[in-house]
Length: 193
Image: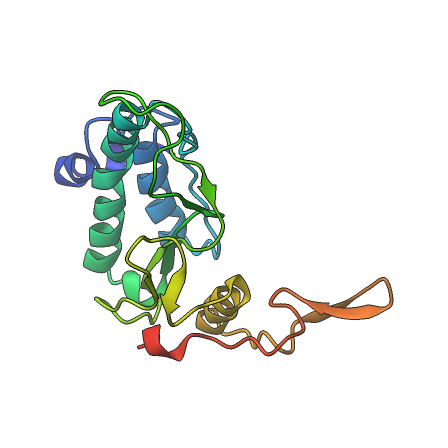
């Protein structure tokens, strides 16, 4: 966790908070260092995206914390030849409504949880760059084209890790269970390079 061996240009890439422990920037550069050392799974969290209120000011703070460091992580992994073998996933557990929650003023409103659709992105690890899969309706409320179940996303991630999701099963209360469910879930081939 000692960043003294990092060049100033690398530290600058991640932003001004890179040497402040606990920040997203610090976590992002540590993630790269862990990947370099062969750690197979690294999770970096950034809490506080649940803006039921104060969205206009809070989202700016969240993006300020994360945009430069996540871009730096992708650039840094690519520059070091690690992005092709590292799957980077950016997502959450649900979407947000596109309409306002609570009172609507220019400086204070929020958005509620929205389980019908959400977006996430993946980079590296054999995922095609620049590909968008799935689309919502004109109100961003319902899925319009190419629905992908969470289990399809899990099957895609496992596939990119070299794991056949259909063979990864375990007994639970007398039944066979899988991380991708027991229905016919498949990796999303359209996003795989």
